[in-house]
Structures are given as C-alpha cells and as structure tokens.
Image 1: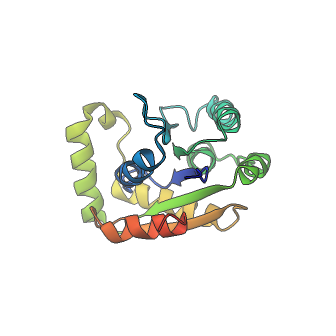
Image 2: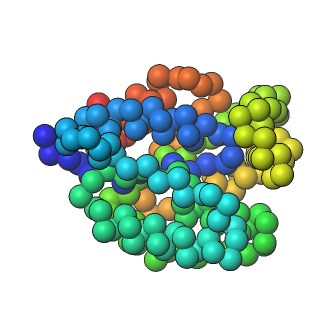
Image 3: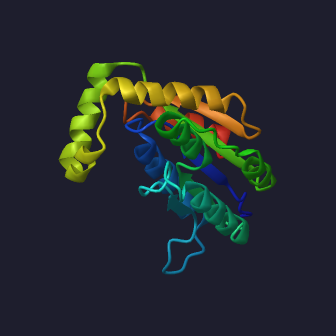
Length: 192
C-alpha cells in the first residue's frame, strides 16, 4: 500500500481538543502505515508548542520543524500547533504580525493540510475544560486564562485561516469524544 505522505497541522486555540483529535487520527494512520518493525513509524507526531511560540524563538522553531518535515517528506507527519499559532500569539501577546507566507509556500510543496479545531463560544464549557486541564497539568495554572481569552484566540485563528494558501478543514470539537469529527477529518484526508 502506497503511503500518501500526509502532512497535517492541527491548529486552534488552547482547550479546543486538538490533542484528543490528533490521538484519534494517529490511532488510524500509524497502524495503517507502520512498516511492521518495532518502531511506531507509520505516523510521526510533533508537539511543536512547548512554551516556544510567542517568544523570540518561535519563528526559529517553526523553521527548524519545517526543515525536519522536508527531510522526512516520505512519511506521515502530524504537527500540534505551528505557524498559525505563532502568528496568533505574536498578535495577541506582542501586538506584532508574523509573516508566514514563505513558510506556507514550503508547506504547500509538502501538500500540507490544516485541521483548525474550534469550539462553541461557551464559557461554561471552557471553564470545565480548563478545570480538567489544571487537574492533569497543575503547572498550566501559571498561564491559565479566562474563558473569554480562549474565545479571543479562536477568533484570531478564524481570521488567519481564511488567508491560508493551504487546504484546510474547520471542525467544531465542543463535544468530545465525537466519532463524526474523526470521520470528517479522515474524509478530508481522503482516508475514507
């Protein structure tokens, strides 16, 4: 079976459900394209936002991960947050615009697709997701925001995605788990 060489970027505001959906897609792609050895080589998952985006190192990290994507372009790669996150964080936290046209030119050559994960603008639901995150990751309390701030993030993502050169799909992950969203993503990737 020929590997279609998926390059997928999951973007969206914090608390949207990106990690959950990525795990569902990974659980489909990795076994399907695994070569059968003792390594999980059917799909590679890059968790790109590790306290870097929105800092002076954000653009460097985007460039280096993109170099890596180009170097391993014969396999499936999923990235959790990438250039749009850098643009959102720079705009919201530093009032700067991040020019990612050259990055998207390179991503387009890799046939990269974006899954923009969104949620309903429901502050009660976001408060519950924030509570769940803080229970799992107490250190997140140092950067936790009010639900309205996550909604503000989402609105910037929704503005930026309209100008993307890449194919993209916007999904609403207010209700998780949701097998219909997974099916929608797999159809978008032409896996179903």
